[in-house]
Length: 295
Image: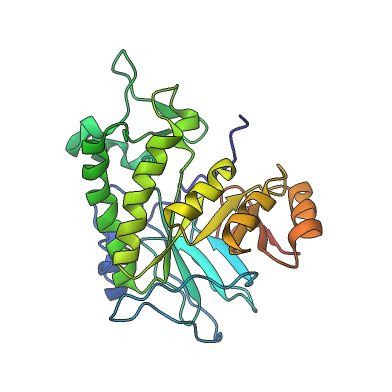
């Protein structure tokens, strides 16, 4: 299969800068937690959006809401935006629907050393003992091949999810549901779905909606599993948006990285889904690489 583009997420700031902020500290930010750090931001006024309550009510996103994808670094959302996705170490944007990015199925490149030091057996390895790596993004795959390992990984990732809830996010996107496609045959879609089921339960227990990230062919299964919405990269480019839209009742956040993909997504789905064009590195506004367009 064609390997989907996914933002590089290599923007690393010091934990000291962010962890001095109360809401970020509540998210579990630390210098050794196995995830990279995002950026702080200022946000404009926007209509209030429901947040998880003390009873843990899960609030799914509205279909077609104006959206911005900021996982490479947070910045003030453009006017009219009502939903954003940001890295879990960044603060949520006030009065918007906030989605917390977590790399749930693969390790961030700057976190591989942490995994090696603390949980080396939870990284997927081939028959020679070498790490199985998504070479496009230098991300080692997590080993979700057994129930015991999935349970252990769910505790680690679950702490990140709980941190998202504590920080004030309304939802979480669990990246790389399609990790089996890059596993050299060592993982299957069933492994990914079994781990996804654990993440769904953890997110819902924390009062968060949870989004399926990519894997169009698993959209209906993902919805049956309990995922509440989808985050789809380049579904316009590859003519897959309908798979997500049908499974998730148009609760789909579409990120395109090429003009042709944006044109296709807008023509077919611009009136129904949340569509945005971003640069591949999802650079913050004000940087030379930053690019953002909508339908």
